[in-house]
Image (tube, rainbow, N blue to C red; front, top):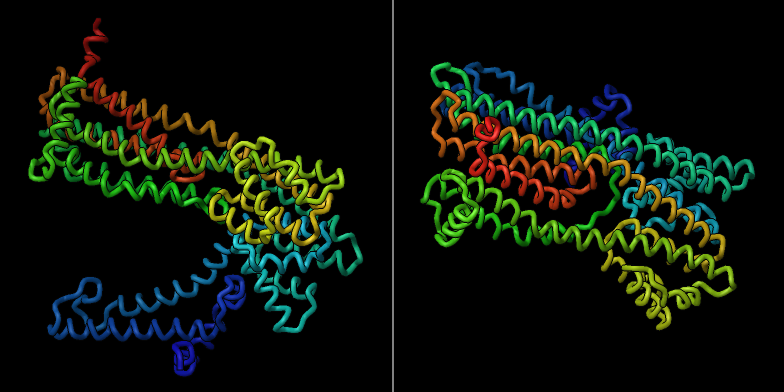
Length: 586
């Protein structure tokens, strides 16, 4: 007897009772594709809740009897604790919400994939397959993971209930709360029942989906703009306000206002980075992200991260206490750099922070430019190749002969891959094997989709002129959408640079005022250590968040973070070498 059988056998009464009072729960389970009978799921949930109630009760009784020391939250000095009721209820609420959340995430993934799934179905149908056979072929298409699972669900509905494919698609569309998905399946079913032109419907539906995607991209620019403005307000004005409060508190301790050093440290090195991570999450949730990503950049970044963190420990911590020195030559090198730049005493930690953050971001920036930049050029080459392939196919040559005729042309970064594809076709390699080897070398999702469609088009329908024309047209549409997304988001790049300059410049004015005769007495070395050290960190996170909002990936922010960190180092140099007060008086 497994855990499901046990829970349903002994706690089935809980599941059967809850299913009656939770409206729409069965639909949530079906929509989330959780392969479990709803009362069984709720029985397991009820079993866990009862166990938590018993355990917290035992702990509370033992604590009440002084056998165990008081337990925070559970032990309240009374025999019955509110937490005894709160914890099981919390487990029940989370468990009931979980399928709805899973269904929502699944719908969000399908919303990205459905235009490309429709593109695939249209291309395959133009090559001679029926739409339903085209849909079933997506069961092995890993590039569309959510659609792949949905196709398996449709196939299961058809086979398990003995329905015809059209009726099965209608049943599958009822439980997925996605307008585009319903329109595609139900519209196809309607076209079949009324004897309409299904291929014409699929073309129009796909074109409509890409127009809607274009509208979403335009709205994305506005959403990302508001997100960038909100982050700039918090990251710039919030930081300046905290800096001012802390410095005034140091300068006028008798006033009784201000922040302690511990509170300033908490804000600068914990709260603000956490807020930056929150904005990265919000940007990720709001953006149009493809199902797969290229992780090579992060692997390269992670490879050097332990070494860079160790170097950072030798550059940042010793200015506060020399107990952390393990390799004296690293800290001595930092002091040499400080003297070379003619920086004041007390700027060592800030300079060390800036150097460390640049070292941390540098491998990721190099890898991002190499991997992502190269694969972006591959996509341009594929689009040009597909258009040339269509025109060559019109001459009557087979798709294989067309590829052989075109492989000597220059398609940029894609040329070397085209040479390999042509060579393997001539050697008699299976087309599926050719795609798998291409997939191992290239991680750009749009490039993989285009090559997958090309391989499937040739494999299924012999690569007819119509199917290749369809593929080329849709490929150009995806490229236009990518270009439009970049054009919409690119103007946002300037915002953090202006913000970093304002943050750095205002911090310089703060320090110049309090250090060079503002009527107050503040330790210069202490002020430099406290205020300048987090300046580089704030600028670095500005760059990371910018990359995520504008480029759609964290790795795109590494190059921005390097530039903005250099801006902060210039600010450190300006504090030591430029007297703003004298300049103003002069």
